[in-house]
Every structure is written in C-alpha cells, then in structure tokens.
Length: 280
Image (cartoon, rainbow, N blue to C red; front, side, top):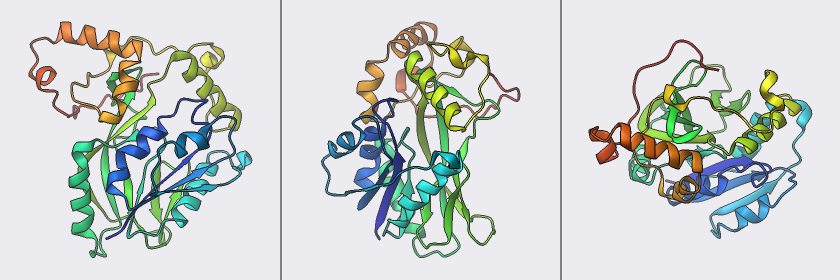
C-alpha cells in the first residue's frame, strides 16, 4: 500500500499558516508528499524545504486569482494529479493530525485498500477559534469532512476545496475514521487575522462586514465557546506556548474547571451539542 499526502500553499509566512506543522504531522504516514506552492511574496518555499524530507515533492504554479474560490479546488486537483499512491491524504495548510491517530489511520487505509465500495475516509473536525482551547460547533462550521480519498482518478476537489466529490456525480461512499482534524486557521494574532480576512475579500473568496478594516480582528468573549480539554498534536506545542491569548485563556480554564476530570486527564473529545444560531 502506498500513501500520498498533498496540500496547496501560498504566502504561508506572511499569513502565519502552520503548513510546516501540518505536513510534519502526517508525513510519518505517507510515502510521498506533494506540495503545490503558488507564487509567493515571502519565504514559503524555504519554509517547506526546511522540513528536510526526501518524501516531499514540490510543484509550483501561478494561481489565477480571477477564478476566486474555484482557484483553490483547481490548484488542489493539480496537486492530486501528481500523487502516485493508492490513497491520497489531503490536508489544508492550517489542518493538523494528532500523532496518536497515525496508526489508526494507517490501519484503516490498509483495511479498505481493496474495497472498491469505499471512496473516501471521513474525519471529525475541531475548529479552534481565538484560543487553542476553544472551538466552534455553531451553524456555518462543518463538523465532518473527507480528507483521505481513493486515488483512482475518479474523485476531485470542488468549490473552495473544502471537500471532494465523484466525477460521475454519484455520492461518495465513505467510512468514518473516528479521528480528528485539528483546524487552526482561526487561531491567529488579531492583526494577522485581520490581514488574512482582508486578503480573502480582495481575492473574492468572501464578503465581509464592516469590521474588515480593523487593524486587529476581534474574537469577542471566548467564554461563549466550548472548552477543549484534550491534548494537541505535539508539532503545535511551540505555537501554542507562544500564543498569549491562549495561555491566558488556559489559566482561566484551569481555575474555573479545576475539578473537571477531562481537564486533568486531557481527554481528546468534543461535545456533540450543536448551536443552531450562527455566532458572528
């Protein structure tokens, strides 16, 4: 069984994407890893080269911003086309896998390798927001998605590359992995978050409200979001330790929930409760 990993990235340094951590989190599972790098204004290529793995293969493309959100799926499909494995394991540049899930994922891919009735493997999502110890479960934040697909040329990325579909129009046949994807795209310094949102609007990915022009993005009261008591992937520990808002939040959590078993045992789970109203 051969496993390919793949991702796309542009201006990772400028916008503080944890793409190095993302790749390193899944690299032990992969036999190769394809990175599609767009034309950058920073040291993204050097950042990827700094991982120093002969598994990594870089392809470079000029990203057509006039495609807007479709550009992401187009570039994702270019990276997918360069994969040679039986399975293709996709992570976006702010998504990370926990080391405790690697063996389970490898065994799951091995179990279904020759099962033609399985097109994709699905993950649960932890969308961290503002703090590495708060996550979103309210409306508008998807909680499940496919990230491992059978590399048979019959499956493609679509839209803004949040998921995959079969080219023949039939629904994807999937199995659940029971594992998490740790999504860190919304845990950024407030000034970086504001820059990223403004960049997304300029390209045409999103239409923002009046707060887009702020010098710093405002996360609001983090207490309105569920607490994550579990461990994070080890590759993320330096970033977590260097994030002041998260460290302050964790101190408050420890004081408030000093009695809570999950806080002591660092159990990896999320609540199944969904908030119906979208929290802006």
